[in-house]
Image (cartoon, rainbow, N blue to C red; front, side, top):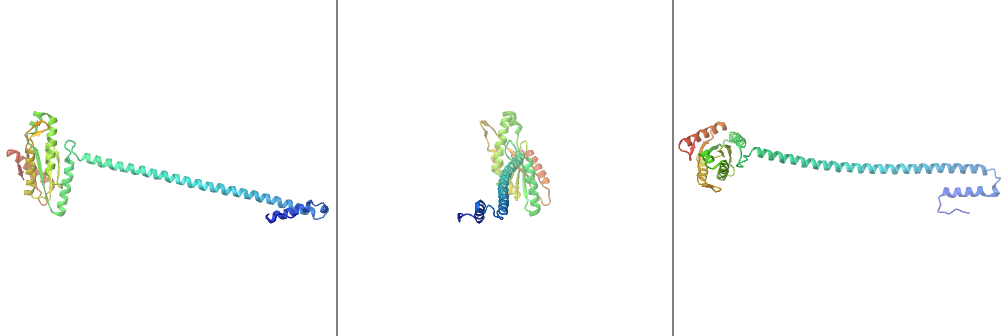
Length: 265
């Protein structure tokens, strides 16, 4: 009986051999025994080959699974690193913001909100260096609130603090947007006026002096306030600290002359 044509050739051949070996008429044929041995050897080898194929398929399957697993692990590590980078970026940004906030706090007077002495010294140093490079000059004014101790004695330190805050607002409102002002210490304030000749600086300072003299109450407390000013224009070749000293001397002259006035060095 012929094997179906759809079967592989080796299957067809094995079927024919098995049919011959099963034929009783060929039972005593001298080729029957070698043919049976050959068939057994072929089947053994085929089983070995099939086992090797199964092992190979299993190996490739495991290798493919391992490759997929490695890819997944790689992707997981990449996602973890990206998360760490985002956390690090946020941490760095927070540190930078904190550093800027701390630096700003270190440069600000907590009572008035103006720059403090450290802030003013940095601006003076920068302006002195810019003047040396460009030769444009600057003016410095130092202001002292007249009889401030009497305000504290009469109304208390809380009112005294409020007075300093109101005066700080008058100073800040009186300077130009590119000028610098701050609390020099106690009831003293300093104004740095870049590229400003002496007469122009005097006009600015006079405006601030008048604004302070116009203050007649702080909150519900009636007050009478004045301030004295010492003004100095930077000289060629002069260190900024020397300019400040001359402004300070002019301030003493203003106080000695009766206060509530502007004196130039």
